[in-house]
Image (cartoon, rainbow, N blue to C red; front, side):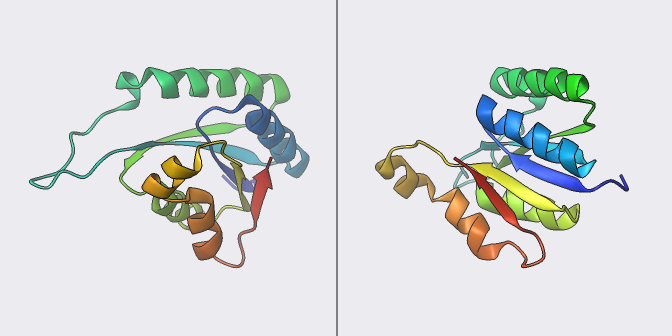
Amino acid sequence: MSRPKVLVATRGGQALLDFAIHYTQSLGGTLMLMFVRQVNVLMLGQPPKGALEEDPEAQVIFRRADEACRKAGVPLVPIYVESPDIGYAILDHAATYNVESVLMGVTRQAVLLRALRGDVLAAVAKHLPENIPLLIHA
């Protein structure tokens, strides 16, 4: 893990994944692909713990990323997280793993949905440590 680490938070956009692989390859780095499953917090307890094995959407994304990274010769570290706060989960992993940069895509969510869930991109941009650049792929 002495290579530069690039953290990519995605829900599976192929253009973002392709860009992330190319960018990580140009750095001679390791791609840390993060999939965050948002869970709702229950009033009377903790939400049930799921797993990657129970999440077919995440499995497809990680499988596609694994194939593309192998072809490009880029090491891949898949990260599966369940959290009520997607932005916090991304920030936590970026700081914990001391990544070189964080790469995110611009979402095409409806304005109302963003208002209900929160604007993850804005939250990450606001709270990301100054020494970790945020790269936005549109």
